[in-house]
Image 1 (cartoon, rainbow, N blue to C red):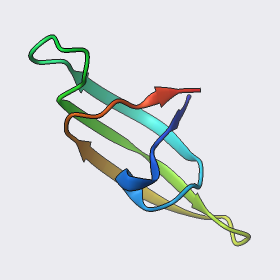
Image 2: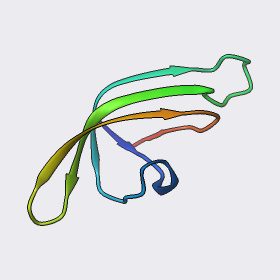
Image 3: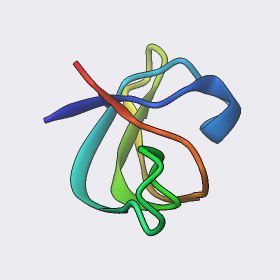
Length: 64
């Protein structure tokens, strides 16, 4: 599963492999007030993988 995570969330345009995601639209306005994402992010030519966890408020992740 891949999510496009906007650059302002994680400071990179690299693809992130999502292992788990929890979303909650608490007030019904169509925005996910709480998004917790756990996954792995790759970096450049070295293929370095880093575990990441993002906690995002009032944004949407876009599934591609």
